[in-house]
Image (tube, rainbow, N blue to C red; front, side):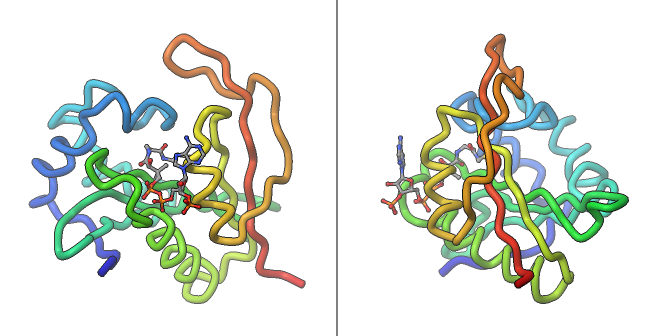
Length: 166
Ligand SMILES: CC(C)(COP(=O)(O)OP(=O)(O)OC[C@H]1O[C@@H](n2cnc3c(N)ncnc32)[C@H](O)[C@@H]1OP(=O)(O)O)[C@@H](O)C(=O)NCCC(=O)NCCS
């Protein structure tokens, strides 16, 4: 059973334990560094997870913190859109958890928060993430060449999105 809940300060140790893994951070944005320290977790829970209107949830599986999913609202003429992102501790990969967590967060973002478009940029090698998006009805809108620089490499960015408008 997969549920989403808000972060609390009691999550710091577990967040560090799961996030401090190069296999998890490899294709994630730079606010998710490696090594991932206690200070990074404190900043994330106190500030980053809710910065600029972001809404970030803990993913619980069988009552345990296993990862995170969140949305970051955009501004101006994109204020009806939000970026969506997610990660899981490595030992929980391959069980359909991200697919279900993305389904729940997509539903919250469209139905409760009123966003009309959700998008996710995915680095070219991250095929599992593309599959998670596709299984949730997100479509590939375009490939931005050498859009992202991470770990000393330039990657094409695969932009996936789901729109709730006709
Ligand atoms: C990407 C990630 C969230 C996937 O989580 P998960 O719970 O393992 O995903 P699911 O089990 O729900 O689904 C994974 C799908 O990808 C497929 N997949 C896994 N590895 C794959 C690969 N190398 N190539 C193609 N498909 C792959 C699986 O077969 C599955 O699809 P299926 O149900 O059709 O068989 C997880 O690996 C992760 O946290 N990675 C690190 C953080 C990250 O990259 N986040 C996303 C940033 S855009």
